[in-house]
Amino acid sequence: MAGNVVNLNRFRKKKLREAKAKQAEINRIRHGRTQAEKDRERLERERAVRAIDGKRFEPAAGEATAASSDAAPTEEPTPKSQDE
Image (cartoon, rainbow, N blue to C red; front, side, top):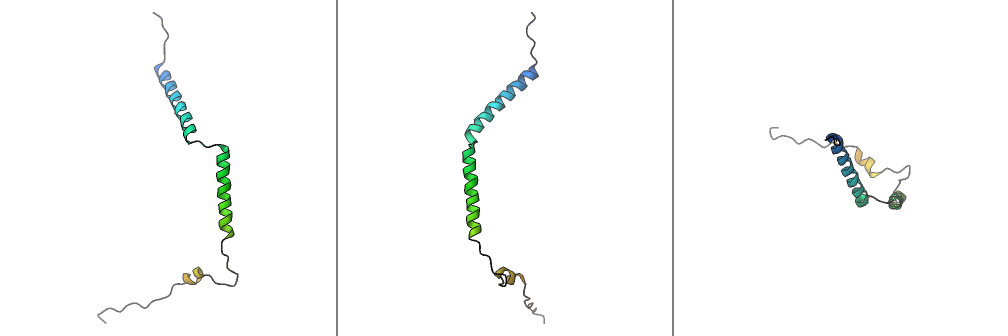
């Protein structure tokens, strides 16, 4: 009558870990990228940033930019009420 005693919690946790490991392997295959793909994307991103920075307009030191002249608010006259 003496059979193998099985700890049900240990069995349940082991089964759960194996299921998670299997799902992780499936996800790595489905969503993973190779190192070459990651490197290619990084190089493309860096190339795009350099291209944009190379086309950026830098005004001369003495020139005022449109943004700086628009920064100073102008006062507008307040409308008079009809009572006055």
